[in-house]
Image (cartoon, rainbow, N blue to C red; front, side, top):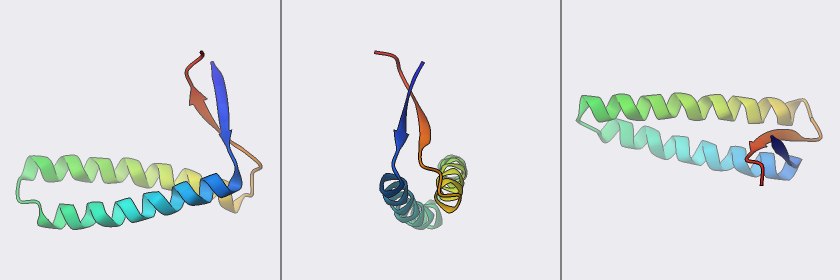
Length: 73
C-alpha cells in the first residue's frame, strides 16, 4: 500500500476545516428532531473529533509528515 503525507500547513488547514464543520454539525444536531438522525450525527461528530485529535497531536508534536493511506495505483 502506498502512503502520502500531509505537510504542516496542510494539517493546520485541514484541522481548521474540521473545526468549522464540527461547529456547523453541532448546530444541525441541536435542530434535529429525529432521534435516529440525531444519533447518526453524533456518531459522525465522534469520528470527526477523533480525526481532529490526530491532526492536532501531529501539529503539536511538529511531525514533519503525517502518513495517510492511499490506494495503490
